Length: 324
Image (cartoon, rainbow, N blue to C red; front, side):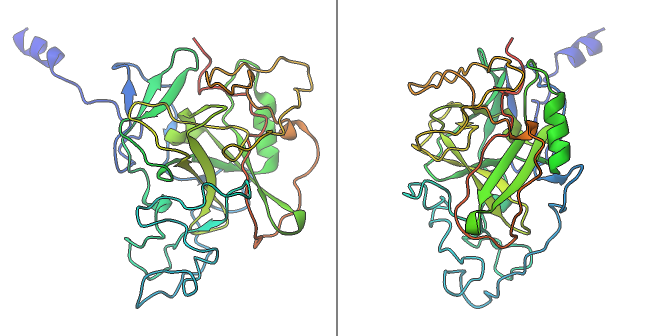
């Protein structure tokens, strides 16, 4: 009996949502609580209909052998330095109202692992915690301060084809959380490149991020090994320890007016209320009905230049579980 009691009272290992697959564990609050089950992956995986395997290396490497990777000599830095000496993203205050293209050095580059142009590929570095919010289901917060421009985490999951993304969104009811995101990058001559990602079944810690009309994170497509972008989230401002992390589901650049999400569901269902609590709250979550349309994907150009924007497709998912 005594041995049994001692075994019962022995402390248990804290739950790590990341299952040991990240550089640092991702805890859960309150103790004993556990999010809905899903398969954890720190990186994108190929899902149904995906044209390209996200793990396939298709970019040639740079040739920086004798010196550091710098603009003008490094093929990966065609648009200038991506990060400063503190590994913070540059150009967050861009007057263009969109994120500039970011290409990191990749697996074929001879430059060392500590190259300044290798940030997102190093994975999660900050201690994060999944926690139960008052009215948004699960959320995600940082346990330490985060300076403006610092990489926080990715939004990783299954990369889907258009038809599969459309099918999954159409199967959702108004009570279901939506994880499917459509990333639209405006490339040369008005063409749009779209990437569809769903972390509902297979995903990473980014799936717990909630929407805010005044977010502290900005999503930027970052390319490392191929044209399939990593959906990297950077601090849009200095973030305090314990602060909930959030991004704008509509993909607006910080301080950009208008979201282009004024549409309503075709079946007349009411839009979900927003609970972000910010002074600029729009009262409802961003809505984008593009995946309900029967139109095909727009033509794209694989080497498109120019800015990029992100947006939630058919986005009506606040939190990652229905409010309780």
